Length: 267
Image (cartoon, rainbow, N blue to C red; front, side, top):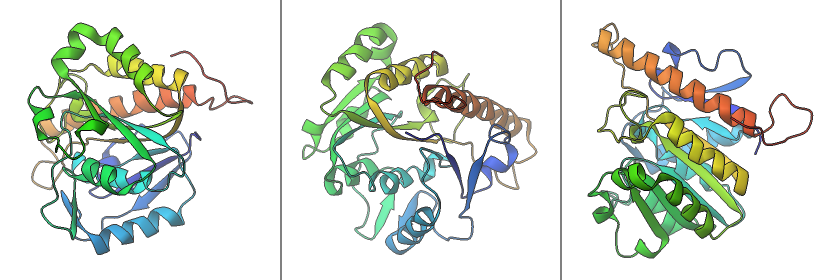
């Protein structure tokens, strides 16, 4: 996986952060595209896809708030070999779309399983205790969930079990920061209890044992003119900036960035 970084600007979330400012990155301007929050019409999704294709290939994408997590579907649609999706998320995102003409942040995993032939299996890590009930029976043989409570008591054994049971050589990793405890990140959704360092320890294990072909990160706090200057908003931005930077720093180490030959480095 290359270590190029692309930031998708849907709502200005990254304009208030600094984690990317000392690296080479691509900035993809998408604020002008209407009706992309939570739900996205197919025509607009195709337009976003065209803009992604126009840019150089990146291994790391920052997608903005979790309301735009469906962009992960587009990024995975380019994968041309069998792979497994490793999803860190407090929700399963396997709900049926409200319409065939819409893609949503809550339906993109189901759509991926239905329409992306290279996707063999999905491991969803850190979901709420009731979340597995939302997985349709039509895909439940391809989805494995690990709840936030199970991770707290069996973290090491679960990590080993996932690696052992991944059916492909390649993995794609998608991170929604709502899986994290609020001490590590703040989003617009309900949160899990996974620690940031704990999550990245698991990501490191995937890098060591599998070919990681791409990563995306979302879960920014919603910022608007009405809350931009509130202390709660500023604190949330600072926490997310730190989390994004920590994730990026480790990924770049593990892809051998700044080294003459790509090697896996220790965190």
